Length: 409
Image (spheres, rainbow, N blue to C red):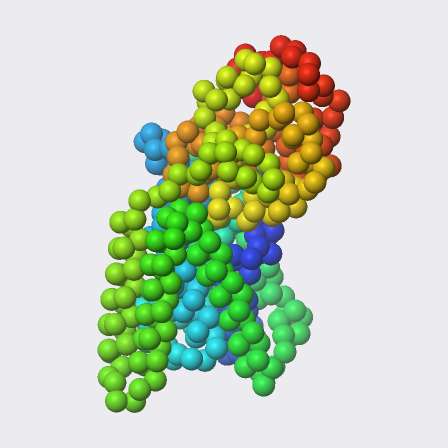
């Protein structure tokens, strides 16, 4: 419960959550909600209810589907290209609204902005739900461990884990709403708000850019072309909305039509499998399979298993900081370490089973196999080059000692 609570707090600093949270805080200042302490507290409570309720509901969905035999895990909704495309359109449209280029409610995709700026119970509750939807791929270390434990616990305890995660995530805004001293320190509305509003459009555009990258890993160039075509259509609709001769209903209908068409097209494109023996930095890797792992273990070869996904931000940071490091690359080459990548960008029951074997439900997962040890070692989720180097320190690449006969932890 403590780790879930801390993981929820950390989620507020993640790039997929921060823009949504900032929109809500900005709205509180903009509408002068700080002048009425009772109203401000009510906003905080309903935001917390939205976060906790959505977290428990999503956790319940994972538990129910897995109990029914489905091989899914946390963040499973981002394994759907249509969902990724919908979020791309949403955050792009929010950014255009923050720049002042559109007035609500022209597009249905502006629902997120509509919720975040409403000064009522529904607005705060909806912002909490949107924050949870955006937060799930940002699996912080505390969050992944807590969720992995939740899947092994009885149902009441598991739901308590998800509730604790939501409580931690909602806490910063709730504290802001309930502590008058902090609320009074919020600056008064002014010219600075217009500048801040326009500035906050760019983190939203960056979120859309990240989601487009995820689509490129799921569907390749065709997926990128489709979603960029959808964003082009949204831009056209925004221009159309500025024409005074056009009825207000036309931009809404056209925008909704283009959005639905793009999402349907994304759902029809077949997902891509990761290419085996491609380079990750300068380290050659192969696609993970239990058979390939067992073959390497039987031959006494050291193995490194990396469970990753394009939508896992922690995974991407580790790739750039650790697996592109010259010393790490040299060690993998010199010691003939087999690098197996278990890609979970798209739904894959084989990767889900791998995570389950080590009591995990979130990414990343790094597992070290050495020929001089009988048990596999799980590395921390936030890596450094030295951690990986230490994991294989003292290993003689020419020594073919007995490897564990099983890949079980």
